[in-house]
Length: 149
Image (tube, rainbow, N blue to C red; front, side, top):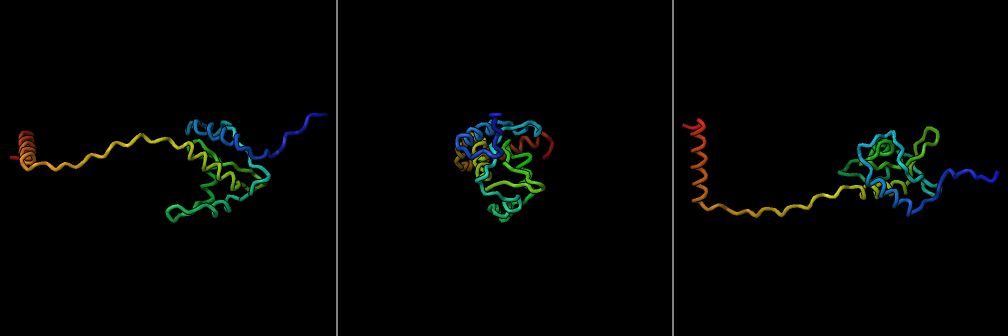
């Protein structure tokens, strides 16, 4: 009586997506797939695509196209704890262009920062006398170890 049913699809909320991305960035990549991870749902206003259609629309990388299997893996297991949103409508698995965008943004946000790179060592040529001393020292060590006579 007065209690309304929850909506099947919730409209896209940008603050909810940012919150989702922050949560996803901190989820352990080894987390069990059986655990429920809160994810935003695909809204009715989004442009739905089958996984095959989505794979065809994604840009190729190194002249290789993404496969439907890859997208299915992204939906079920995710990458670095980030999963692609999907709907199952009968036998069809559907995602959306907007879900792909959110997925890629979340992946970029979850990407671990690399440690700062050390400055490259400058090449300093040895002077000929130092090189000769190092060669003679190496020969002495090889003779002492029994490798040279």
